[in-house]
Image (tube, rainbow, N blue to C red; front, side, top):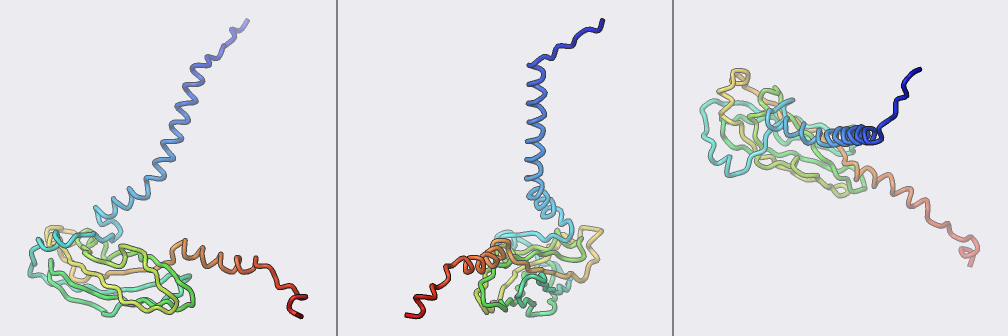
Length: 209
């Protein structure tokens, strides 16, 4: 005769709570993974991610004798009807020297569009030494219909690059931006024709009066 196994409701409740807690923890890690990944990229320069520095920090950087060349690249997503380009092809600068470069963007449409710029440098080993003090990429950019704007970036290359065996021999760095339309801006453009189509049609009887 087999013994009957009686389930302990307290044990089942404990197992259920543990499972629910594990699910919540995994969900939380999923939400946290994006900012944590961004922080990791900023600290390590992974994938050519550049750094952000304030003016006080930049003023304490000593200029070294080595000169590097920075080239400028500009791209727009296929879905973004903007013209976007650098106003200079390249700049030569000493390590630690602050420089200002400008990009130009123009909205080619008759509607207001908000864009955001993704960025990186190559070779990617230079990412953790390429510092921006001011940049249009720090915030979203809203362009009115047909608006044409000049956007600056103030930057320097940290002389600490000379202490890195993997990066000390770099002589040329390419700074690249790609503009994409923000989701809110794109959604607003889609909603506009829908809102117009919902308007009540004119009463033919009224138009004859």
